[in-house]
Length: 165
Image 1 (tube, rainbow, N blue to C red):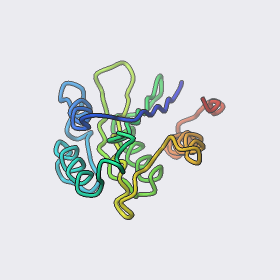
Image 2: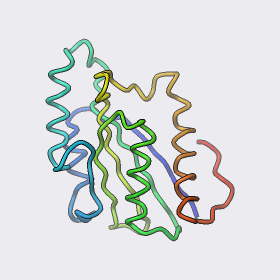
Image 3: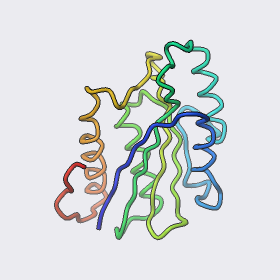
């Protein structure tokens, strides 16, 4: 029984990542969602437009167009709907509801996993979220704690929490 949290930055065309996670061969429409939008498929285009309006080239020099979180659940008695609920809660709490995201749960493998693409532009302050900045490094520990907390709320019996990678 294990749960894994991964994150990496996205550079280039964020819409490609969104298209990948929303692939109908990997997920179902009921297992997809987005914040602050009604059509997840359009999120990347909207975010790119917002970034172009809010930032000139000097402010966007790190090239990060988004963050891609993967929440993976091996050998656990969770449903795809529960994984989607965990992903929505994770997005909300991990970003303090300050960043928009697109969520999709993939059911095409032996293990359920949720993909979360996060827009790095804070919707309240218009500042970019630099997840890899020194003061943010401890956020991974927070991310792990959130996942285990959500699983416990679902009544899933867990072994001792894993060490923070």
